Length: 88
Image (tube, rainbow, N blue to C red; front, side, top):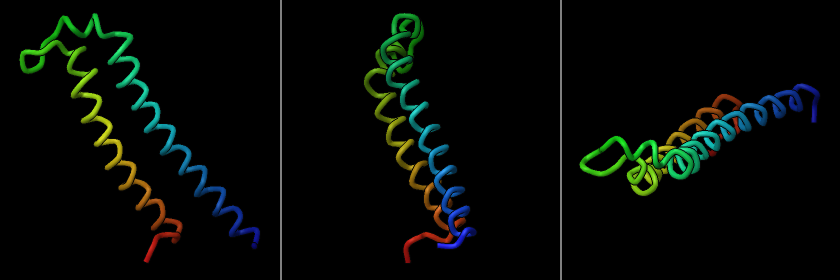
């Protein structure tokens, strides 16, 4: 493997890890911080007749997780195309 290929591989994995860390940070914030730690403070507000803390712990976290999956796939496909490691 050439030095250029090694540098490209390192750059690819560095960007890949940034994408993963951002998604994990969002996941942690929504599931743990909003759904557990600040649930009592969030319950002071309502969404659709339900307390926001309850909503985050149940519906909001699931919706956020699905959105995270979509954005991860989109961002990784773009990264794969950028470094020419995409499928097909």
